[in-house]
Image (cartoon, rainbow, N blue to C red; front, side, top):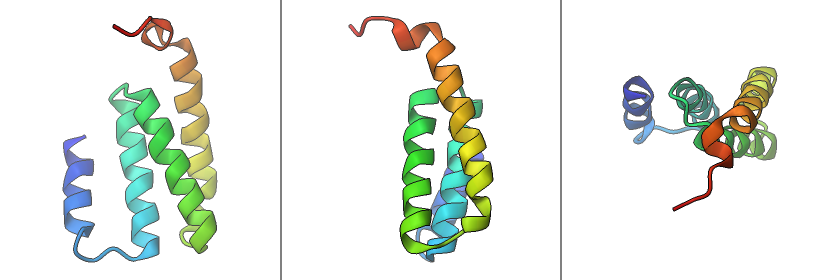
Length: 86
């Protein structure tokens, strides 16, 4: 997650639509790897919507969809996804 945060910080001053999609892709995958499935789903869905709306980074769509599918599957299977909130 630290590396994804560094990328976000680097792009904050120079964010083109393509770089926004690239950042969202890496951030979503980092969240997925960290086991933060709900956050990964949110990031990846937002990135997909942005990519489609602005027609940026469309070549990454298959990777975004694959990561989104994996995040949704893991979220459903994770015990914390079904635990009552406190």
